[in-house]
Image (cartoon, rainbow, N blue to C red; front, side, top):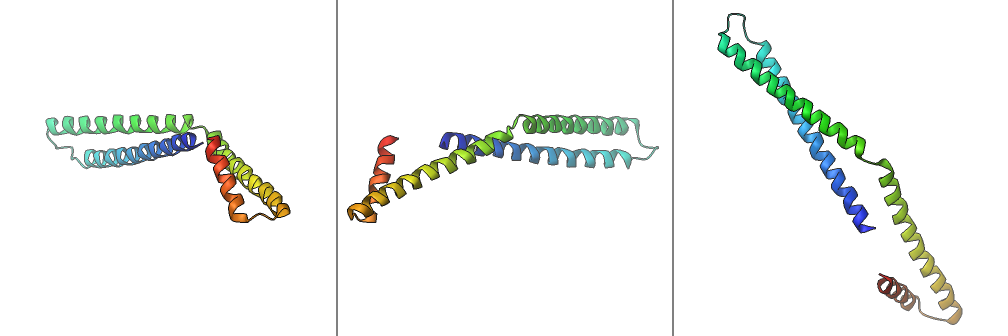
Length: 128
């Protein structure tokens, strides 16, 4: 269960990084576009070509970041989240069911609750 949870957390961090790169690329594209649009018609041809190259590079980086983000979102399986939560809840339910069962047995036999919890925890550790 921990492995699946770690995989989910890793995937979420990767998506967060993808979003951050997308936002940064979008900002850089907007800056390059504003710079290009602010040039005057009387600007030197080499300045225009340099500005056009910067704009093209920024647009390509933006498109790559957008594509990476969209494919990351598409491949993220939403059911993994539900499944991981359901597995965690089932594990908690089994644990507490064992504690309740041992508690009933111990109560009928006159046992101490602390000892019962230690028995269940010991059984869980031995099962792993």
